[in-house]
Length: 314
Image (tube, rainbow, N blue to C red; front, side, top):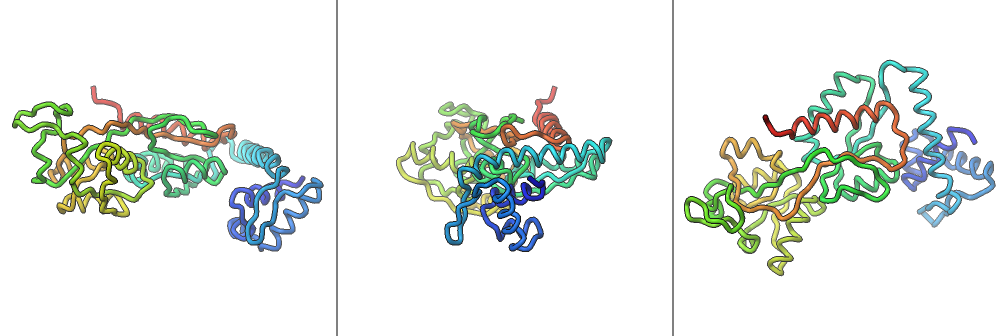
């Protein structure tokens, strides 16, 4: 089996499209088709079922795929060891989400840009299910998750830090009368009680799109406690959500890391509601994947830098 045929097979198997595989590999589509046929001929087995405009792996293709990936990864590792043993190099496709890209990862990205200039990082913004599936398929080399669970089928992961969430509103919002440092149900110094989930039933909520982990958990909690799906005014980004809240459009549940500046400046105020769920920022990769040197360095650096960011002050 020729390596180039396995590379083409792995790409087609990952994206399940001859056309897309040809574009990503910079081949003519006819060349991709010819290479797959040559591989099938050498193995004496069909690797794909052709279903009109769609394709899927046959049982033989499913069995071959993990071996193809191992061979490709070993080849890349051997090439790196021989040609550039001193300085890490290569490309890493990184799945992440907006809040982490903006507020957690800049120190990591800056470190790699300056310390490992031959490592090319390609960031792909996805959330939750999309990141996990892309890691399992091999589309992403590594991904960052913000999830309540810390174990994921088909993946290995390391927890970097718990990710506190905070309910915020514009100063002067009626719910801001409850003190943010009171325990749920406790009386505050001003005589106002901390908020209960039921107190949010009639409040206009501002949030990111469905699929965002903290938005989905917040919505599920409110629906379970009030019996009615809450109304959300949806914004596409965290920055737009913060502006909407600051403008008095409603309240939003956001990661504390994303609103530290606004809370400090007084543009937003923290409401006295404690989320009954926790999220954890994690770094993940496909289980059983042989990690090349530059990927191991990236994961180790992510663990160290994020933990340094979130460590309590002495």
